[in-house]
Amino acid sequence: MLVQANILTDIVTTIFEKSGSPLDEASLVAGSLVKANLMGHDSHGVGLVPTYVRHIQAGLLIPGTSAECVKDDSAIMMFDGRRGFGRRAGGEAMAAAAERCRETGVVLMTLRNAHHIGRIGAYGEIAMEHGMISLHFVNVIDHGPTVAPWGGGEARYVTNPVCIAVPGTENTPPTLLDMATSLIALGKARVALSKGEQMAEGLMIDANGKPTTDPSVMYNEPKGALLPFGDHKGSGLALMCELLAGGLSGGGTIQPNNPQQKSIINNMFTIVIDPARLVDMTWLRSEIDATVDYVKSARPADPDKPVIVAGDAERARTAERMAAGIEINDEAWTEMRETGEGLGMESRVFEAS
Ligand code: NAD
Image 1: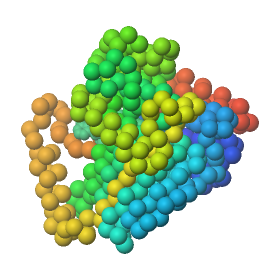
Image 2 (image 1 turned 30 degrees about the vertical axis):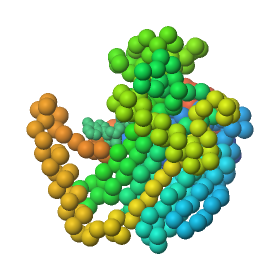
Image 3 (image 1 turned 135 degrees about the vertical axis):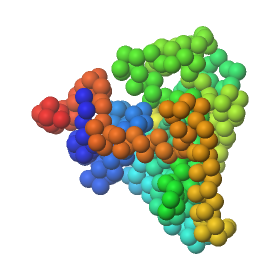
Image 4 (image 1 turned 60 degrees about the horizontal axis):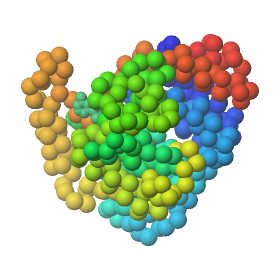
């Protein structure tokens, strides 16, 4: 079914309010999940709502919790998300770091112990709203590994996302590289499983380390694993996400001596840079324009697919989905309806949509 973004946002906001969030937190998290759907990242969209609610009910996600600044040392800022909604904690930490960056020119910000922070691009967007460049390295803990290291036949990493955000100019939209270091985000297997679809070849292995296209291997025991992007290079980047985000935030890494309560905790290592402290901004903007234009001017390998850069695909999908609505498959919608009804919402809310 197709649901308009505003209707979906209202429904999800109500679900989170009924789960214990104040309205501003509920609508922030709901808006952020719907934005992920709009951008085409259904793996990080409203399909996560039942999981978030289950984690709240199990005491693994604590609504109404703000990020605590545990170290404020000029250009070094460390935050603890205290198991609150990651989008709230990450947004608060990021806004503080971006504001500080105006004074210090560069800020190293860490966030630990936040429940799932969602699409990492959201934090790059906050930096860019302040005119800053940002780099983010993230690890995911509190559950078992899901991604095999290069050459491995079983999982040792999680999807360890990396994001780099460079603000746009008058002529060039923001460049937002936002990606898992696995070939696909884990939620893409969840989306395929719920649609009853097979995955493309070459993305995952089964529990015996053999290639498979069956998304259920990620959810049934013994589990299979996703593969890293870029062979040994993506695998190396994932390890750096563990060491930087898990290590330097103090939140811990995927290694098995750390607790695994089957929730989703993110740690993030972030560098924020004020480009105006380094180069002349008029010159930088003209370089951004010229570089992006040059890259996009490459003759396409497929004449029907012009070259695009990071951020373009999400902008195009947002325009499409704002107009047409967001497609939610029956199983995901049923799960959301059952979650809402379990919290006392009337079933007609879901029927009318
Ligand atoms: P993806 O593979 O769809 O896109 C990755 C990047 O490639 C994006 O910046 C996109 O703009 C760019 N891109 C896409 N098509 C392109 C093309 N044809 N040419 C040039 N660039 C192109 O994204 P993904 O790796 O599946 O990640 C999806 C989302 O999942 C991200 O928002 C990520 O932050 C999020 N994520 C979050 C967590 C977490 O723990 N919170 C973990 C993993 C992933």
